[in-house]
Amino acid sequence: MDLFSQIEDLTTNLLHRDGTVNYHGILLSYENSDNYLTSLLDSIEWRHDEAIIFGRHIVTKRKVAWYGERPFEYTYSNTTKTALPWTNELLLLKAMVEKKTGETFNSCLLNLYHDGSEGMAWHSDGETDLKKNGAIASLSFGAERKFCFKHKITKETVSMILQHGSLLIMKGETQTYWMHRLPPTKKTDKPRVNLTFRTIVES
Image (tube, rainbow, N blue to C red):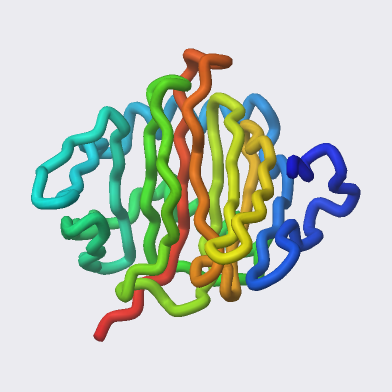
């Protein structure tokens, strides 16, 4: 079910059960969003993402970067990344997101999709490094893309379009009961940069 066109209050919970997802809509002007997109493309230390799946070492076309207030280690897909120190720009964006959501974050995983052919398969952000049931704030710049959720038990789905300069937040039991993905599309050949602000809990 595509709920995007049915949302009147953009802070309404978009999930029917077992979690909370709020779409806050566009936070920045089109001009400011363009400026951030250009700057992030140029200034972030992008690297191709890596994963070990069934013993095979996979390198993706999609690029990622991992930043934080300390050199946090973050392990997913059987690979471990060490956080780079915040840039001033990322700190500004983090403060903006924290003010809007009332949440606090100590790290950010960034994704670069070069065009619509690149996406993300169904997954949950349930790694043990992350604060359990903590909020994850997703800030999008660039090409508008469809974003989907699927309940792990009932298989019901919810989808929406993430706009240039917009903010989505996932919290509560969302990662326990729902998967999400960014499906590939032929509708755009433009890049998209996605910042996912998170909270790492050190053991």
